[in-house]
Image (cartoon, rainbow, N blue to C red; front, side):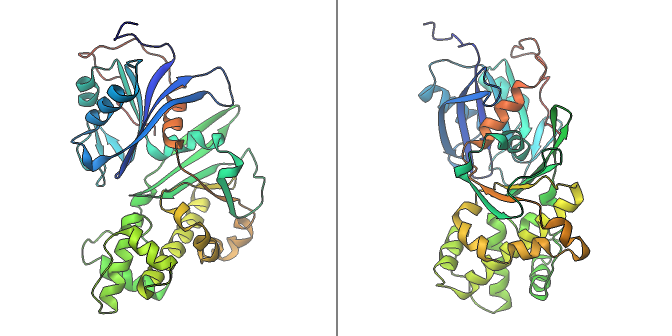
Length: 348
């Protein structure tokens, strides 16, 4: 086979967050229920590489004999012009520069949770935990996909006839609204660092660390835990009182946010929680104040109670969702290195 040959129907799909970049070689299928098949897959620690192009090149060189020249990228953040705005990525990300560096014919970018929203129908029942609500949602109502990882992502699936419209959001950048005296104290501590305290400053992996540090300040204790995973481990083992309180506050604040988002977007068709933090605290989340805080919306409690809220394993959903979205985009002519990046845009 020619070393530069491309296999028909094959292309790269990547899911890029602040911590991990998940890359896959995928193939289009003729199965409407599962339109994408993952052929090869690998995770890369973003901080170990100087840029995204290096990660994609490493994957192609070590995993792919097909030499794909097309790529769909799901990326945390907001695409402004040609560059992604995201304070969790360890490097600058320019769509056109990445495409030119790799010599790809096409490189398209979509918001990471928009990608997950395109893929939730691919989730198998064994990977789903129902936290509250009825088992069977209405297929005609909007569905919310939200989750805390290195940041906080959210998107909404809106049925439109035989099609699905996915709306990307920057819900993680909305202001944190405390719902208890303790959360008000935490907000006061966090607001000393910045006048705007976004929701992801609390409901994310780094947000859990922010809560813990704020509580240490309030309790006049020296922080001993420096990673979100260490806080989670200490809380689950009940080995540190402040870590335990931090995780409880994290779950409660996330519940309040999800309830707000359901009401804001009319997402009565259900909620999928897909953040990387949550599977590690599955049972803790179920026992926490998450559900009660989600439902605690005054007279709207009755409307929220039947809404199904499911925790799902994120896994390969980002790469699958990016690939599914890409396949539904209008086909354009093959573009060479000096051609304008016609798909250098996020799906909004």
